[in-house]
Image (tube, rainbow, N blue to C red; front, top):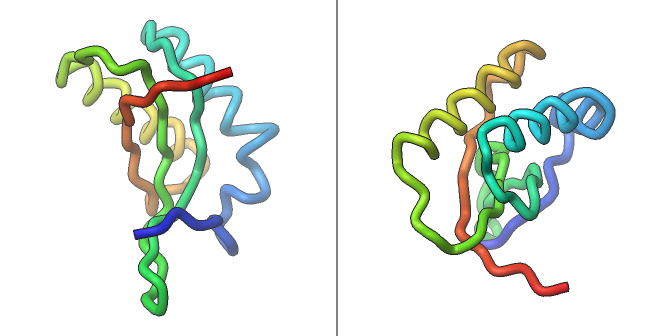
Length: 98
């Protein structure tokens, strides 16, 4: 499994200036200590690309399922404001080195 770019998706034209600021504000409002929020696609070499996914990186500590689910569904609500319904939301526990 590989991560790939999200070519040909509506988000390519509106993510940085329009959608991302709303997502970032929501993550802060939800109290997540997030380190990244990227739009990617999962793919297997030689296979069709999977759906677009918003991947959110958080520190490795237990995040209550209810809090994670609420955050993911609220992110999906933001995407719906822009008529984007073909995207998943994932929250990854990750360590970031600077």
